[in-house]
Length: 222
Length: 315
Image (tube, each protein chain N blue to C red):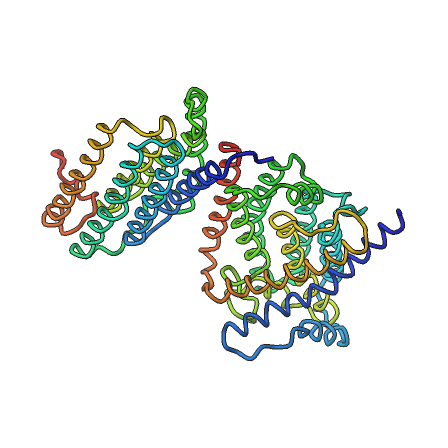
């Protein structure tokens, strides 16, 4: 019944696990665990890229895989953990919506993105084209994670997870973006992360908290 | 041949009736070992049931006929469910007569009667237990149904024996949708059988209990039937899991050899599953009752993700 080759099976499994991890991030209340999940997502992405590189024999993908490993699995989680330690923010507050509700919205988002990706998948010619829907779902769920959190830290994690989804989407649709674009994006994420790291301290100095609802008080009419 | 089919079917039911308390005893024994306690005998549930059958039944004055009837209905539903589930062989008369959705209906019937009987006396504990049981049930049932839908999509049928046959004939493949649904099914099993993250089967007279609260007013033979039905329910759920997720070894013909192999394999699977269940119960803490919906929503999510992944990836 299932005539797929083993590497494609593995890629599908990895895609499914990526989606699962997105939901785990959506449901996670603790910021430390959230960062660990992000690192795990990066690891899965690394394995998937490596597998795809081996499958297609595309050397650029090996570089992408190395970049993923260095940046998303090792450096960014390390940086985030360091920031958490220095800022002393170990706990996230309850999300704006309760967990069950958020997850049900997440399921709707997945259905929506699968529908959205269907025409794209029909046009793509890659073996992994079915995963495009999952990539779109990962992006949108990361977005949902950002929307439902109030703390700057978890919003940044959501942002990074979104980038993971984008990367996976590009990989499934066209076996990776051109090298220049990819390096540019990687650099962007890196710089954004460093700048945000500085921002965290600024926000905390200003408001004594990383809760973004304080930003609302800057409105002029108040 | 027809007569032989029925004989095998009756043997299957008798096996389920006999094995269910032993399975429960095995789970309890494993759990005691894992918790460094001296374990009760594996036959302890039998002794409990025997003792209860020898006692005189005490029934509350304001109990209606429903209260007396419920244990027989619940027990009967569980026996019928045991007959429907292909635990040792797939081509049996009753097993082929009902599909998985009817099976869920049978389990629901048992739950409704159990809850009605608990509310019948009008004590606070019974009503409380019944309400909690219905809450768990209405959250667990959709998850169970979605699990069944995923498998039905894979095999294009809702009949459990055909599902078991097709899945065991299929060559081994990584199947994320089945893996997700297996996790969902395990969570439903824990919730439906009042195991630890949702309810503590070893507790009596605590405000957190669900299953025990339902049985509080029962005594003697009624209680024995209820306890036996609960053991059968656990056994049934385990067998549904085997039929869907590890169907290898279930006899498709009626050769005595394949039946014998099937029974032995069933024993091995039950031993492993029981140990696994005990392990889950040992490493997890009981959730607050208000967290149970979250637990079951996660199960539902796993099942739905399995369904979606199945639809999108075809795997």
